[in-house]
Length: 112
Image 1 (cartoon, rainbow, N blue to C red):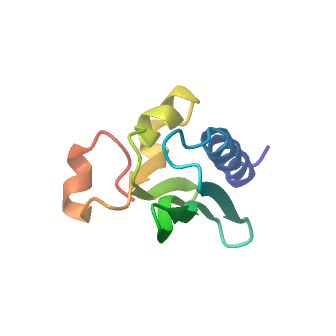
Image 2 (cartoon, rainbow, N blue to C red):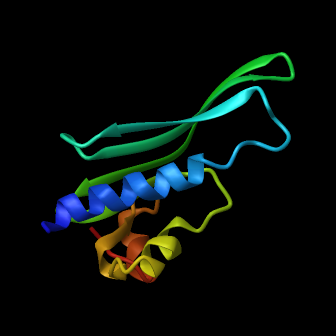
């Protein structure tokens, strides 16, 4: 299987698994998966009403660039890069996009 297709499938499965757990304290919120395989963008958003306020938040966003998984945003308690390593993604194929380029060399993951 080609590497990009493998990473696309991995990201979709990971996000579907994460999204399957409903909110315990916010029944008016739902998690929605947004997938663009053509451009390699994968996103999990939270949307709905909570305590009288409408909410729309990007919880996680990943891209695939140059055959690497880029973690662009993660507003969860989940250590997503570590989760990908456990799913047999080589650490050098995971880039923490939210870390400044000069700091990535110290992350233990890919630099770009």
